[in-house]
Length: 202
Image 1 (cartoon, rainbow, N blue to C red):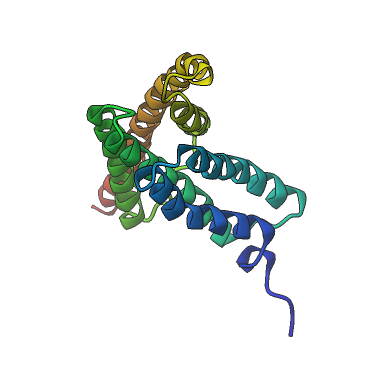
Image 2 (cartoon, rainbow, N blue to C red):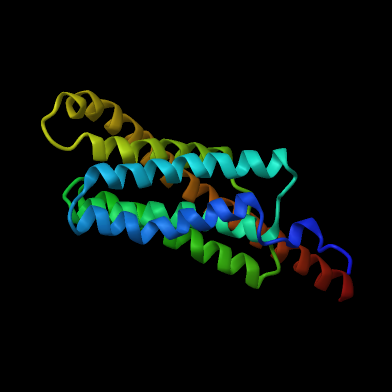
């Protein structure tokens, strides 16, 4: 039998890393909300960030990009973001209205993707703003966790954590606005094209 096309493979190193990241989500949530082992929760969060960086590098280095990987990687990012925000609200690390804004942004993006798919469009490409937002938030989350308490490390981490969180949150919201703009432009172009076709036929 011939070997399956590379893009259809499941058991690649990048995909395994993404699966491990997804498996770490319930563990992270338990550590943070159950016994409140913040140190171990921080380790899981750091592993998530490191594996997120590694799976992309390895996929390009070993030519192991795949359709499954293209789904797993952003799914893990979104899930960690959502779970971390909810957990931080429950722990009073971030205010509820900040979480509401970020979750609402994800809901708007999900609606945009659904509308685009129903009209025959692929989801928009991830923008530089979106990547920068994810980068900032991936640094902000572990730093916000480290900033809890009154230790010297917490005092030093606090301003840096807030800086990453503010910039990451603003960029995250702005990337959502860009999704809406891209969706509107795609739908407008379709409507214009259909209108032109009808005019030509009449």
